[in-house]
Length: 327
Image (cartoon, rainbow, N blue to C red; front, side):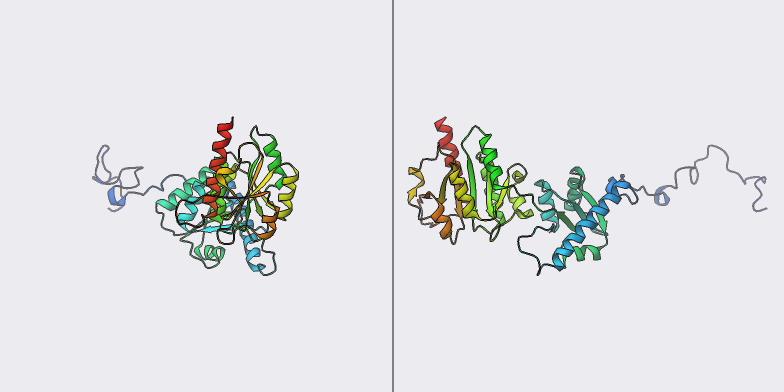
């Protein structure tokens, strides 16, 4: 009789291996699938860390949205959070140690090695990791191509120009500062920051207007050295250079038609401010008039000028070499 467990053959004898085994959840194709490794706390729904990350990311997204909506009314030099889009740019920023608020990953995004690396780097750095609907990521990206990932980057915290003098006063070496005049490419700015850090400089000064700023692109180009070297923003570059000259620093402008060749310029002893202009226009008129001297790099070939960051690197390397020799 069906359901009668007392009849002969109704109960399987102990020790038999046929069929399902208690506690296994099934075998072979019928077996239960594991859920994989435990995700980071920031990605566990309902976890306190996830709620904090969501709140921070929501606040950052609102700030960026307000910045886009009020872009016509805001001044061009106002600082708003920046969003880095695309898998390669996001991974490069995280590798370079760019400070970030949140990493947004669209739901359903194919987890290739770049996405996996971005999530791992963000988790290691304590950056909030948020899985969001793709439509939300489209809104954050403003319609631009994002490949399923976006990194929210806070505005850069600029130093005051006087802080560079304070840092130089605490150093055993003479002051060495680089000022950029009209350099608008953030990759050039990042490369200059990297060179200044490599050759013992004390900081970089950029104008508040008509100049590249410390965006995520500049951070990447600096290879993370922007976290260790101060970058100051001057409201008026000419006035700042005059203040540096009053403080005892020599202001030397780098120009293709400079009055003194680099080989004949004494770079070893005096505190120095090296002013670098754009490759096309060079130094502006007022900045040129403020310089104590203009220096040119001798060229052996038919090239008329060098890229701003390359020219700065050449002079900084020569300054470091002569100062080592004078010790």
